[in-house]
Image (tube, rainbow, N blue to C red; front, side, top):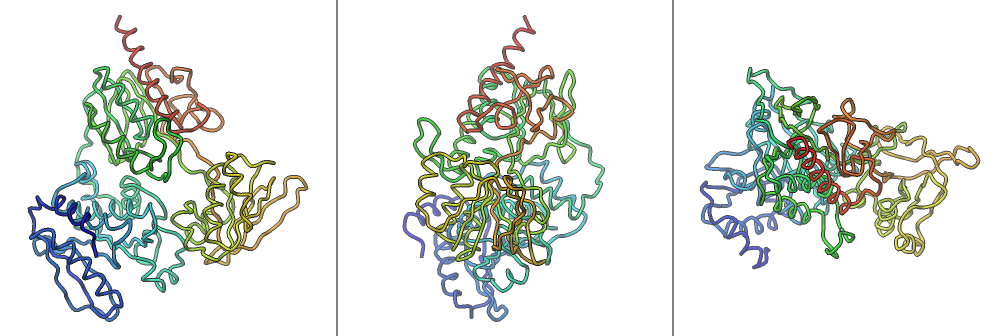
Length: 516
């Protein structure tokens, strides 16, 4: 089932396993039982420390769990982890053996202080590019605490259950019948969801306060990584605090406008950023939520677990997040017809009618992708003209099942209590309210800056962006900013990289002037 090249890679990955692993299959009367067993036996053949065992299960069940040294880990796969999810199986084994990139001690402390056990199910599609991040993060948290258990559930093989729960988007994380999270997320966001759900015990442990760094960079995207590398190259003691290295780049598919790199993908670029960062003396605090910043002679960055990272200078490069419509019905029907990722959730709307809100590059790209799946696509744009690049507009014009409505202000997402049934909008030219019956709505209206943690510390413009001068200086001494969180126009990866370098050099120059 696995090709020779992949088997050779697995032999390398698993060559140094120190624990004994059993891939225990439950049930053998499912139509895909033989396919699952064949795949797992292919995995097991690469190491004498991995074996496959079969145990009677419920009729029609298709499931396996990972055991380490004879004990279940709490990680189960209800389906066949192929496609993008094959790496989730491989990493679960490696992580359980203490190998790979694991959560740091502060994350482990937090997850081990949960007030009660929690069993999570993540519903995924094997074509979803965001699903593996969620599955792998939750598997890591499961390995860190016996109070967490986690099931991977392939919606294609559990359509009745997905229909019962009203799932129309992935990845969807559930406890019981209640959805806790939908869509892309890293370990930090998921840990925040879990601790918010079950609470954290007061263990009496004191927060860890770091040593004082010359520079603390907030944010792990292109701007943040660039700022950290440039600071370290100047010989400054540097820390980088981030939810995940790569930031929003992790969620980007094709990248064709990074000069000198004709084509790359978000995962590859994020990996390259992480690799470059590892080549410099930068202390990385990853999987961390930043709660607030306390400015002073030394600036304190307070994390979600109570720990504090201290820096004489700060460079804020916290980026931006997807903007929501903020209209009635949007949050109620998110995951039940309202979606934000056409690549992940588009297949749920095959042959159906959908709308795309937004006429910029991301909106028109979404409309083009969805036109190949859906029966009808309607693009709603608030302005009087589409803002996407000409090459995208030319492609859009060639599609017969796409309609564009300009000057449209969305006012409500309409549903029947379980799913989306339509959308209401106002024609800005006539002030007339209209409604369109449809099955799904994809929101693609740009970004909101992640400036909340410094809103009381530095000056923001009316859009919530940090105001900076040409060197990245903010209104507060020794605090600098770079990238999409700032008021610098044109939010692009290549611009963010330059901004990060510029802010780091400006901060270094300020330090040298102060010392002279």
